[in-house]
Amino acid sequence: DQQVKQNSPSLSVQEGRISILNCDYTNSMFDYFLWYKKYPAEGPTFLISISSIKDKNEDGRFTVFLNKSAKHLSLHIVPSQPGDSAVYFCAASITGNQFYFGTGTSLTVIP
Amino acid sequence: DAGVTQSPTHLIKTRGQHVTLRCSPISGHKSVSWYQQVLGQGPQFIFQYYEKEERGRGNFPDRFSARQFPNYSSELNVNALLLGDSALYLCSSSPARYGEQYFGPGTRLTVT
Image (cartoon, rainbow over all chains, first blue to last red; front, side, top):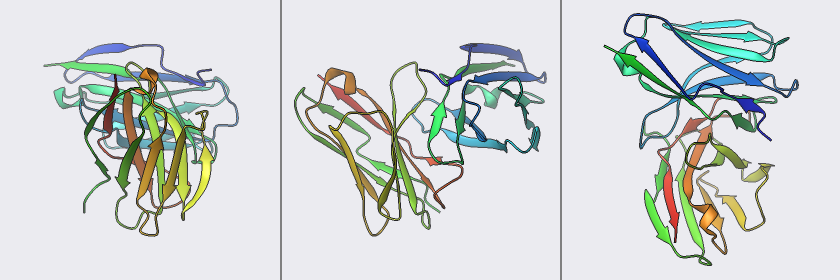
């Protein structure tokens, strides 16, 4: 039972443009969400988080948006850079304890 | 500061054997969690330990067990290995019981 879903397995974007990665969840009890980036042969690297009391959180080129009514969150990367090419996972939890991960979206930024 | 470290990096075992994976958290972090990631999937939660006590358990059989030591390092044990246990096992640490997790590079387990 996949409680967190990333329906786009892959995404290609031109360098300098915006990358938008999407994530949907089914459990309305989730109140803490994170995005991770993963390179091959490495563990996931934390990018940005958002609590359910907010609808937006920004950190440099990365912005996460949360739409609780739609049970949807998205990660915006502006401007996209070739070094951003990686697999991106969203994760959700209840009170930031046990995390449920999506299946990942492979982002390719084309120079 | 060193990040989360895991050992070994790779491991090959035969069906029915036992395996122990080790994890050292970031200095000062008291929470350690274990995740299993099979090819093409996201990490799946196995255990969380905080202050040496089990604080959460995912939907895994009793063949999976773990413990946390006084120095906050942790071991994941898997008995009676099955082919389906082949995966990347990730350890994460966190300064508190709740909050963002910092992951190690993982241990790649192959069961033949």
